[in-house]
Length: 256
Image (cartoon, rainbow, N blue to C red; front, side, top):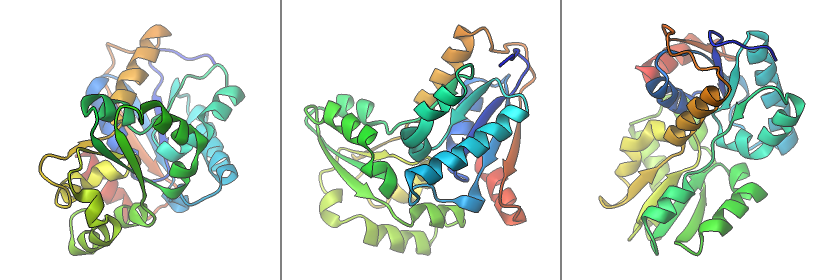
């Protein structure tokens, strides 16, 4: 792939979740141009098969590359865990940046503590996530919570209302909330509901997500390849496979 400094950075997700990563990217690289492709027409990815996730991720990658993107950020925990290596093999000249649950900082900053990983059902079943847990389970006690249905609520705009509160109250067992040192948000949709999640955990519980680390890595890779644009004017373009105007307004609000 022949890319130059002025080319945009491509970002994709199963829907609106990746906007939490995009905000981190813009914060770290304000002079870069970004193209974001949300695939809300096919959300959520976390309940699909691995083959389905790969096919959809290929489609987003192709769409972004056709528009000249110099780097692809897979702003979806499920897609990153399922298929980022396959994408790298298919497009070896393209730098791909993935995201993974922030278990490492949670475990290292809370030694011997109780940590809860919240993620989609598919993400929690993957060998890559099991290996990540195995790396750090000697540092802390790590438990998993599959959050089936949570992505759909967030996509539907339930970010801070009684519908969401009732769902979370049933989703998170009381015994998981007690004496919890850290909750790892293992889906890029979940940072959008941080204030709501804080209502269900004790004040001392710390919330972690991988967005900031992904943004720093994306910048480092651009610099390594001489593709960063320190003199650019910046800018963000948002696209979605679901043409619903309400979804577009929601995306703009989440980026505000």
